[in-house]
Length: 503
Image (cartoon, rainbow, N blue to C red; front, side):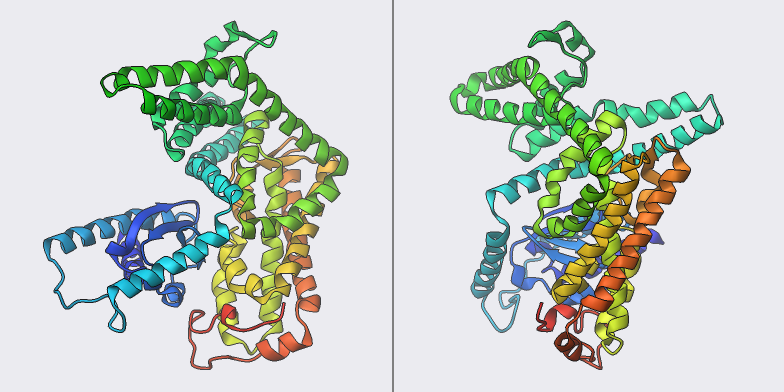
């Protein structure tokens, strides 16, 4: 039955994004179905938002449909299957010559319109730095499900160890939870080469050198190397180098020798540079990141938490949060958890509090209140896009007050880090209530859970209060506290983004 439901969701989405022929690629991350489309003008944005399974949409370099964790992983293969079936059917049964995608314009005009929309969207998001961060995110996002699964198993193993239960099972759980992390450099190298246009397995082969036990026999910069030195940063750098060496070889090596010479030179040159340079340098940087994060929260935790929690929503809006993914992964490699994620998760708490305040401040705006009611459950579980793009960001001031709530929650968690209750998340991806199973720390699970729950409560309360009292001007209340469309039954019929609101 659940398969039928997922297929029904995919079938409902497909025509609203222009049908199979309008799809050029399909992928998904933790919460979003990411679709590359040929013609943006064929996407029926408001109808998509009105679908019950859709929590929100985000227009970026790809068209992103927020379905939520778990759901997106089940809907995506059904969507891909429907796209493939549609293309096969179209190839077997050519459309009549009179058919046109839109009766009012020609197909050429539609293509031009779609190209213009796509170019305009790309122009806003195609700075070299943002494009690089997206590519980095594309390397690490596919690893998140394994990080989450292994992280939860590691937490369960720690609980069993502390309680002294099932001692025969503890070594097995330790092996299961640690196996992936011991080889994560290989996966990073593989994905890096694939993302940057090289042969994926060569990137993995070069990165595998970093975790090979035999590196202990090698001296670099006057000291013996250690397996894993440099971690994911070293793997990232090694695979990037491998891609450049491979591309250089492809241009110069004769075709008859390419299959032998190019892979050999790629692995040899990149491997030697990795062993006698990159592992040492990346190891130094990784150690510095871990030392700095520990020092920052131990000495200025409250202030650091305030800044991190307050700025995270703007970072998400600008796409700059992707720069933190390698840092999170490096901290997990070093200490078993990232101390930054619970603090950054407070931004989502501020967002939830702000949305609840908007709900109560605008009792006559039915469409906006419907949007908030449908998006809040996902917000509590750490899926913030529907509230960001459907509520606070279009309204302006509530986005700022949501950041205030995030800053307060971050300061609360940071303060307890400063007082010695340090903890983090054993994986990246989830936040909100979904982060509880991934928490780990040196102060014990009871204190860890209590501090994180306290931070969420502070974020909710401050986000609510700041938005309720300071999130609206009188003019905004006069314009917004009405029902713009009394006949609207869905958030898509009259969403907040349609209303001209002074920020």
